[in-house]
Length: 51
Image 1 (cartoon, helix red, strand yellow):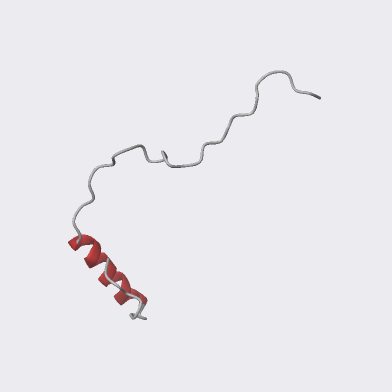
Image 2: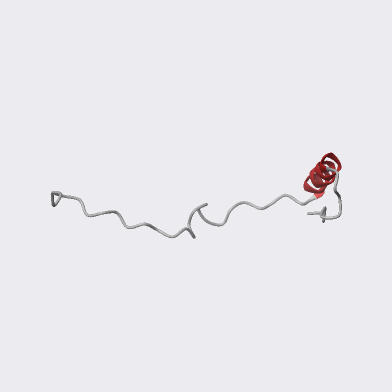
């Protein structure tokens, strides 16, 4: 993506970013599931509650 730190005008910055996104090569398909690197949460034990 284009470096837009020096542009102060937000509308101009938007235009430059949008143009850069359009010009960039398309991303390839995913190799794995979207959340495969997320930390997994253990499920609480099922059964009768203590109290």
